[in-house]
Amino acid sequence: MTSSPEGRPDGCGEPRSRYVIDCEGAQVRVHARSLATVLSIDGEIDASNADLVAEVVRRFARLKAPLVLDVSQLDFLGSAGLRVLLVLNEEHRQAQLHNNVVSGAALRRLTGIVTDHGLPVVASVPEALQNTHEFVHARRRFLAALARQGEPQHNAPWRPASTP
Image (cartoon, rainbow, N blue to C red):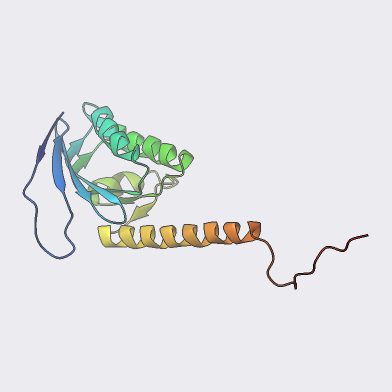
C-alpha cells in the first residue's frame, strides 16, 4: 500500500485535499469535504486486495467523521469485496458512524443477487452528501432537544421559598 498527494484542484466545490492510496489493484482517492470524507475507489476489489482496502477505509473511519464510499468507478467487485463492504457497514453502524455507499455497475451486479444486503446505497456523491447534511442537522436538533429537557423550566413564575 502506497499513498501520494495529487495536485489540488481549484474548482468550486472541489475537495480541500486529495491523496491516492494504491491497494494492489484498487486505488483509493481521498477527498476531504466539509460534511464527510469521500473515499473514491476505482480499479478492482477481489480476494487479493479486499482486506487491504478495508484497512484503508478503517483508517479514515477512526476519524469519527461521516464517510462516503464511492465505488461507482470500480471495474470489478468480487464477493470478497462485497463481504468487506458489508463488514465495514456493520462496523460503522455499531460505531454510530454515518456512511453511504455510492453504487456503480460492479456493485449493482452483486446487489442484484444479494438483495437484502443492508448497505446504505445511493446513486451519487452529491446525494450521499445531501444525506449526510440531513443526518447531521437531524442529530443536532435531537441533541438540542435533549439539552433543553435538562434545563430548568422557564414557564412557571419564580416564587421565593417560604420560611416557617
